[in-house]
Image (cartoon, rainbow, N blue to C red; front, top):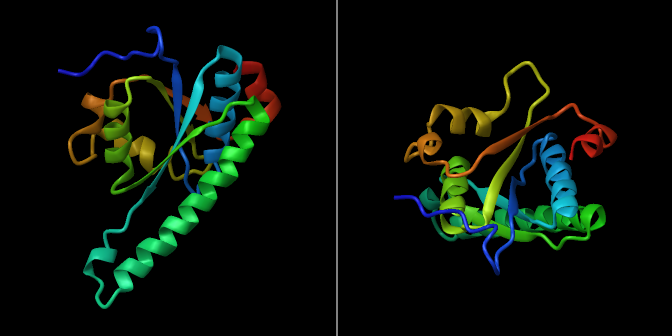
Length: 170
């Protein structure tokens, strides 16, 4: 049985979860979440997931080197976006770095943190579809069926929105 969200209970605060990755639309989701957090007194959780399936098959420390390089890049990306959240909202975001499949780790983090109340994603602007994470969550293709187990609503931000357009909505 899923645990009840606690974001409005005493001692808790509503958090907006954003997946931080290399996609151009990531910034749109983060901008929206930062603006909503600022205006509603909430927080922002930034999740970066390293998919290092190939690292375990390497030998003589190559896998460890791959993991260290990926971790360094992920932490730099998180710091870059944390600075952006602070500038936009005055909120100090939480940073979470995990290893695995993105959709699986999104579900696990939401299950673990009862204050996460909204998952904010941005749709890709290209013709190839909304993006791999949105497709994985919508299809339930995560290892343990993400969609039926997703415990929070998703806010889907069009990736083509400008800062001003997001400000008018958030």
